[in-house]
Amino acid sequence: MWRSAIEDAMQKIKNNIHNHPGLLPHITENQRYKWGENGDWIEGFYIGMMWLSYEYSGDEEFKQSAESFLENFSQRLDQHYHLDHHDLGFLYSLSATAQWMITGDEKARAVALQAARELRDRWRPAIGAIQAWGKEGDPQNGGRIIIDCLMNLPLLYWAYQQTGEKDFYDIAYRHAHKSRRFLVRGDYSSYHTFYFDQTNGNALHGGTHQGYEDGSTWTRGQAWGIYGFALSYRYTKDKAFLQTAKELAKYFLVHLPEDHVAYWDFDVPIEENTPRDSSASAIVAAGLLELLDVLEADDSDRPLLEAGLQRSMTSLVENYSTMNMPDAEGLLQHGSYHVRGNSGPDDYMIWGDYYYLEALVRIEKGLKGYW
Ligand code: GLY
Image (cartoon, rainbow, N blue to C red; front, side, top):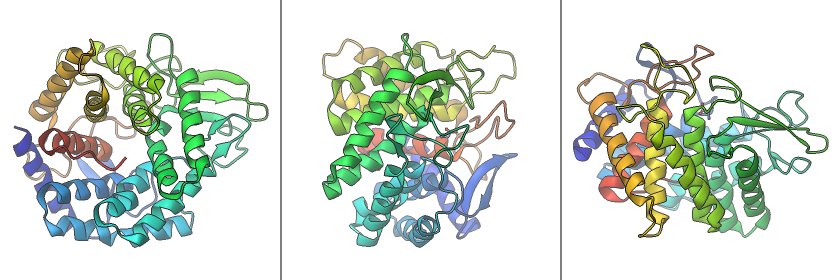
């Protein structure tokens, strides 16, 4: 089943490359990606899918297509085009870092390091964390962290490995600890965002942007936490991150509905048309694969996590994938972007497609993605 799902995914990626040359997918409308320029937080996922497909199949067309976008990603950095945010990891780990890892291309390495320096510049000493959104001093967002940022930290850890500049590592490590302390609640549910006083670093309160309400658990935020803390463990070997990733994963799995794929928030009232977020479950599947690789063989939670992975991936392939829809542009139906904002409340999400493919090729061939 996994192999057929991968073959189907690669065919769809190829169709998209042919049908939309030089363009990148954005948020979906009516089961079609909007295709355009490189100016959002999500463009890296499409390039990452090309690299996964190339590594899985050896098909040069995927490699050539991925490489053809490097200059565009480089120019975006030079022009600082729509880059007042922390999503440099999502953008550049999956494009430039991936290219460097696979081909050893020096230009790709330089672009990835430039992106890492931009992310490092978002460190705010007063709060001891990376500012998620907006310019320094922004009245709304100047003291705000978000759980999604954990997935951008590998770009910093990687930059430390490449350059030996310790502040890349320290910033990522300290940000991960701050996130653990303030975004993760006592029962291992999570806040999407947390606010600090940007002048003196005093903790203010948790909140949400895309979740149901301030104290709820947005399922994709929980998913970013699971995979993000597992990756901080990979780079730092700090057991606190491993334990946090595991407990967040247990919370996620025991709160799933019967078909093992998450609704968009764990606290939203469930009605007939309540949207799912298949992308949250795809991220968690990829995160569980990372966790299961590093947990002790006799860890008592291993059976729960293994069963959760198997059930979620089976449901994603059987109930949510577009395997029976040859003309579909996306791979996973029923993702959600921003339900309360009525933006992509129930459609394909390019990051859902990416993590779904990453999980599939990791299960099938041990490929780990580019974090
Ligand atoms: N990182 C933005 C989102 O998950 O929607």
